Structure formats: structure tokens, C-alpha cells
Image (cartoon, rainbow, N blue to C red; front, side):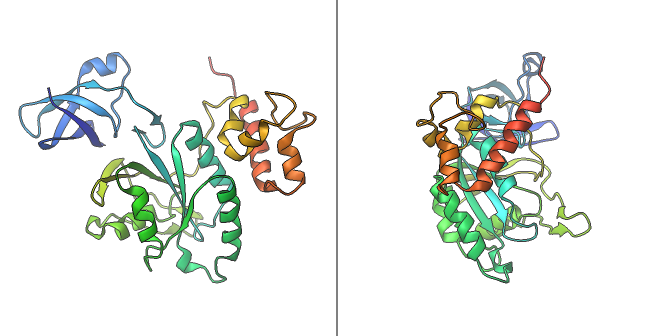
Length: 293
């Protein structure tokens, strides 16, 4: 039987890209019985008599999967954050980074709408330097002026990428700039609500360049650490994880333990204090989480 990749899921149908093009499929009942839900990005075995009447017979093992957005086998997450409208937030960026790190997906930080800045990039460049020092790659882009698009394109080639970020940051606008014929629906932020309007209603893999696939995902502004345990949070901050090798205690949580290398680095100005504050906030949130049964 042929194999392919799910590139779109909509209204109970799965659109599978195989050697002979895209086939519209349904999931077999066995998936519901075994509590397996096919996801965009899944490699599957399917059976089809024609282009519109196929069935997914098997879902191959996944290397990773996300819940929000629901997608599997992602190579990298392009975290799209706007310079303004909505305002750039390190707290929200760190929240995204923790979840991406936990799922072992490589992140790329993309700060867009830089053409709207009145006072230049000075403050954002300081933030960018902090995140680069933490081990992340950061690029500045603008869908209007096309700044940074040539720099972004090589990251996308040959990979499955997920564009993720808060609603209204310009993910769809950025995809339109990369591939104008897409004409994806876009919308700015609601000034009454102070947040973006949802313009993407489903997850779909879109071809960008010669061999790149990008998922334009529904925007969202709240993310919960439902799976992460307190001892795991350290490893979701790679700059902290590197320093923690010099902590006195192997399972140091970097809060009240003596001879903590992370706390020392913060006091010496080697780690940004705001990153450490976010870590403490996230750790408390995880500790306060209701136990799962």
C-alpha cells in the first residue's frame, strides 16, 4: 500500500501527500478504538481507489508531537513575535521556548513588524543578544519591507517547520511574503481586546521554496505546562542547563540551594535577570499544578 504525509486535517478528512499527489482520506475506526488521532505531519500508510475516497490504514511512529497546535514530526519551530502590535514579550517568548525545548524541537526566534518601530531596534537588539547568548538564533523580519526574508528562507528549506506565536503577530503575513500566491487571510490586532484576531482555523502544511513545508497554525496566547515536572524545567532553559553542571547539587532547582551556579551567574550579570524570574514563575506554576490522576 502507498505511503504519504498528512499535510492538512479538516472536518474529519485527512489530505495525504503521496507520490501520485494529494489524496483525501478518512481515518479507520481502529484509530478511535486505540485512541490514535492522525495528525498533520504524520507519515501514514493509506489505501485509495481514487483521489477523494481513501482510508488511512496505519500511522507510523512519530519523532515528536505537539498538542497546541496539533502537529507531528516537526523539525523546527519558528517562533514569530512582533516588535509591536502586540508588544514584544520576553515572558511569552520564554513560555514558548520551554514548550518547544521540552518537545525536543529546534526553535528559531523571528521578530517581525520591525518596520513599525519608531525608535529603532536598540531595545530589541539587546534582547536578541541575550537570547543568542543563551544559544538561540534570532532574526528580524518585516512582511512589508521584506527585511530578513532572504535570511529566513534557508532555515525553512528541507524541513518541516511550525510557525507559532501569539495571535496577531503576523504569521500569515510572513508566509504571504515568502510565497505571495498563497494569499492567506490576515488580520491585525483588536485594539479593544489588545490581542490578535484568529485568522488561521486549521493546521496545514504549506510548501515554501523547493523542499520546505511550513505549518501555519491557529494563534493562541495561553500555554500551560501540563506535562513538565519541576526537575525537567532546568533542561528547557539551555543556558541554565549548561551552568547547572557546576551546581553543588545534581537536582538543583536554582531557588534556595547553596552554591548554585545559576543564581551566581544571575548575580554576576552573566544571565539576564528577567530569564531567571520567568524560570522561577514557571517553576512555581508547575508546583502549583493540580496532580494528575
